[in-house]
Amino acid sequence: MDVRRAAERYRGGDPGAGIDTRHAFSFGPHYDPDNLRFGAMIACNEERLAPGAGFGEHPHSHTEIVTWVVEGELTHRDSAGHETRVRPGDVQHLSAAAGVRHVERNDGTVPLTFLQMWLTPREPGGDPAYALVPDAADATPYAVPAAGAVLHVRRLDPGERTAIPDAAYVYVHVVRGEVRLAGEHLCPGDAARITGADGLEVRAVTPAELLLWEMAP
Image 1 (cartoon, helix red, strand yellow):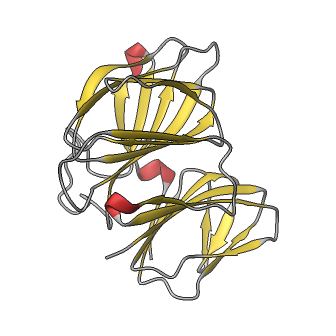
Image 2 (tube, helix red, strand yellow):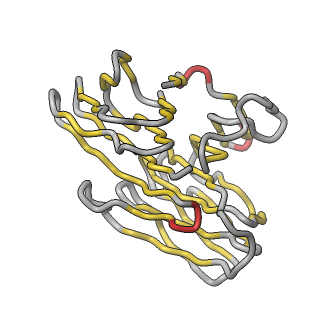
């Protein structure tokens, strides 16, 4: 298990434009050849947008992009004709496939924080696709078959435990609260990268929200 602390993330974005980004993986000018990917995951960006701030239209291809809003509301528009508002508890999935363009903005009056996770598909090409799952339930995993991955959302009360999926690769991100995992104390923004998970569980120290990515080899 490799624990990465919130404070170790690469700083990015454009603070002058109201965009503050924290990168968990090598990204853009922050090149780290030892931190390019984990399983299918190649990015886990924490984005903080001030009211009125956002990312203008930009392209993506050959990437499965999953977004989780922590607070605020995200406005999404893409070249395939989708325009949605993404709120806390929703799972947004944009399959860029052979190519798509989109806009992401904070059109609200309060700060927006969201996590955006990029996974590499097993096969390139295809047509872009979009899905939005409102109020994702703890007991309903969200599969991203193109990347051989499954997202599990876990919301725990203090003292409550949940199993870590037995999988080749598991990425655990603490959204809220504090937890204990294999002797490590994890806080908001901390993540654990687990290879060959077998029989592990996580215990909540405080009320907590976790994202668990289960990925095939």
